[in-house]
Image 1 (cartoon, one colour):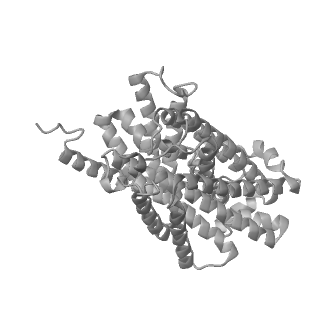
Image 2 (cartoon, helix red, strand yellow):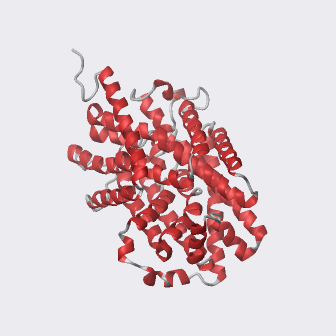
Image 3 (cartoon, one colour):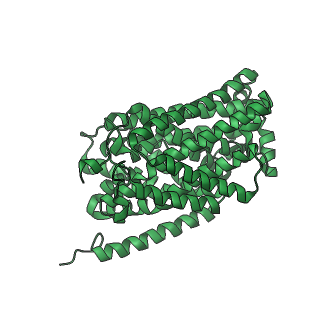
Length: 453
């Protein structure tokens, strides 16, 4: 491939962290906050802490892999290297791309649907009108991404500014109300060991972890990161610590003004999903709530922007490697970005935004990722260490292998908590991917089939 048609390392630590953080925040915490309170009541802060712990532990695995293989496509490269380029790695990397074609548009659709659900606070819409709006959001973001990576970095910083401003306002509002310590004082009395290890707490963690997802977005952009051995790990840890603090403060702030009992009652009654708008309205009035809602919509757009940017590099990387359809390897002739990959994911996201509901999408996103991607990488990093040793690793996770063991246990618990229906959907996608892979492998004489003589 010529220099004119290759990805360029133009994103530094600040821009990489910005793209990670806007991917993580998005509409997630504003939509899932009432879901979590509705599920576990007074233990809602424990669910957010659990999500942060799993993200931090898993970020150690991503950091070691991302620093070692800083290429476009992230997990595609990690799985291929860990399980063998000409062995099971061909199957694992193919399965990852296969499920990415489904789950990446699901992530984008969730942001678009969340956008529409908060927009209802501003303008009442019928259900079909909300669907039209969510589809239109996908089209708008695709237009924003149809440009050079230099311009995208600048747009990302602009969107990030809105994210920080909104979270700062929510936290300040709770502090100024004078009751910020009440949710923290209630923590010991709300704790229950039985609830902590229950299926219901697992479902709450599904929602909080969904809101943390994106801390690894920098790995998908590995081929465009400056000094990746340093910037990729730093970007992830800064993102996880920073967002965890903001999420906890946001939940404490909202819980200090609107009791979790009220929010849980709203969830049971199936109303008032736009809790943050009501929180601002209670403190500052309807006019301020309108401004806050507009800012939430801004954040949703920012997250969707980062999601589509990162995942559009995954089919591209696989196609360049000859492991996916060749058409996905095309870069735009003048702007140097994988436009075919972006357009395909955008079309699927548009369709999913019209078909599905938020609750099903959140569980589906995690179920699609856990077994092949998260657990697959946790095992993979161990295989790489056994094969190559750790002396030459650009970045080494601390306390190895403890983070790997903890990550696998916690991901299995979350997978179980997604529920039997969602697990069944995952098995269909996974099984179909296996069938397609083995047919392809048989035709091309790839692993596990012997080469033609």
